[in-house]
Length: 170
Image: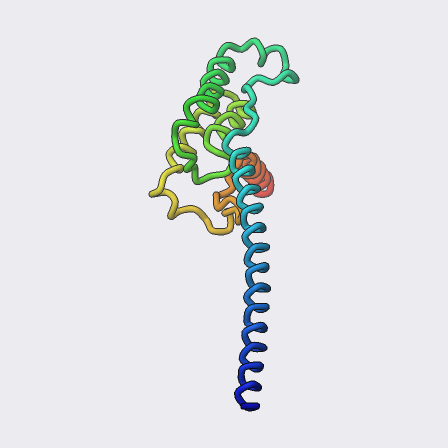
């Protein structure tokens, strides 16, 4: 009889320990679920900010007067602004590069002019597809966005390197 009472007491203690452990694990799961939900909300907010960035027109206030009154800049600027604010939202955001192709186009046109800007944009658009994805160098990929960093500044460094090599040879 005493042995039976001791075994029931031991069983009751084990059941209490198990229920306490289950309670602790449940609390940890709740904390993890709240943390995951908060992180998901933050990711959704960050993604919506990336999808709907503040768009600017190609012509800026600080540009010289000749740039401001040039009708070609207004045509390209208007087309790019229309594409970024209206059309690009209808397509999936699947650009392989960072900045996106339309932002790259805006940057090169404003920095190099319409002729070289259109040529560089055509080059970029030809490289922005899944076939060309195999040619992307792994060191240029941004870890957070998983996109290849390819801004217009790269063309300035290539131009400067070519000038340096030309001057060194003579």
